Length: 481
Image 1 (tube, rainbow, N blue to C red):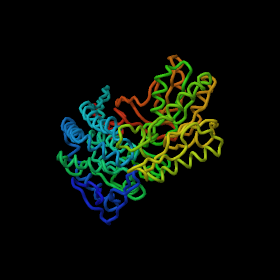
Image 2 (tube, rainbow, N blue to C red):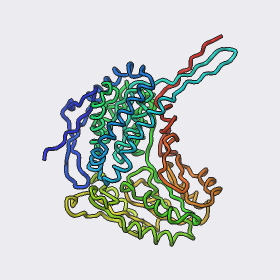
Image 3 (tube, rainbow, N blue to C red):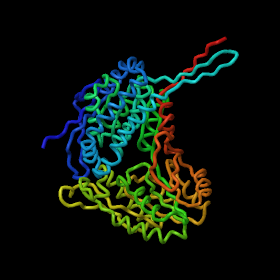
Image 4 (cartoon, one colour):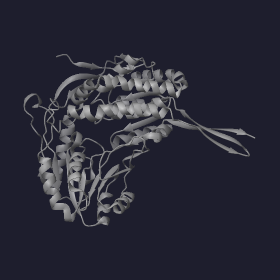
């Protein structure tokens, strides 16, 4: 079987990498190479940035209504190929096809449609005074960059691209080299829709080469990155001295705080999902489960039984709840974290090892849903982002103890609070050091709301008007009396 060639989409067409550099791309469920990805170098990135810069004057002068129509056309193009996109996303990342079809690809469509609507609502401000009239405009930056991760490939790529285009910028986007396929398909959608050349460019390649060249490029005015905290720190170190606008959505070690007065059945079902959806490879997964001591034993018994019954299997099988993790190195990282937890004294209540899936997936990279207990807050399993189907359980005695455990982390992305006592819920939510707090739910996203983290979970906010503000720069014009 011939390998799929995944090329960059630059200036309205697919191009070969200038230096003929390619990377192998694996199907996580089988462990086999199924495509080769262009590893774009400095020359390729420069070509993409120049294309964006050339396209910017005309694109920035289009009306909000026209840009809105273009975003809807891109949404239409994805929607028309939804099943194809879902199957590609599954093959690329190892997640179940049903998950991509029901959740992730539809969300990519929604991203384009949401920001298409928001483009129509942009307004300027005016301030009148005896000294003069001040008008504040929000104008696009020009050529901008987005760098998106492998866990939710199309979903998070479009989350950045859509508002950047809606505000009149031209974009050079770099998807993860581990999951490049749906980005290439987005390029096909752009070409089929007739999107003006250079407005959206998709450069494939490794972070250390392609990503670094993109962040360093002097014509790139703003950079939005989602990924690991260590990589975010390197990007900040490069971009900050060049005075680029920067948004970083980074790692998480999210607490799930469960009080004894919660609605137990709803909490249990949601906590199972927030622990293991997408093999635990979502930055918002609740990897630290904190349970009020009076509920602890009941919760552990029920949760472990449910977790142990989750089906790990072929992503093509509709019965599979968990598919493969994204790569062999990532599988080994997860398993190493579990081994370290055991060394630290963890009791493995279920899982704890790799899973062999027979048939076509016998060489795939699968990990059993794993529940760890008996660890203190300072151990690595409670401090380091594992980013896999691994959770820890700790008991707490009262509100103050719960908050102390929840905030004992260098991360601060999201948290969940389960209680029927709404004054307590609000009190705790105000004191948890995370950018997002869900009360009696998880992953409920209103796209109008700001999204981002505190501490080492990031800088800046995405979503709604926050995204529109990031991708524009304010200019004040004063008409003096």
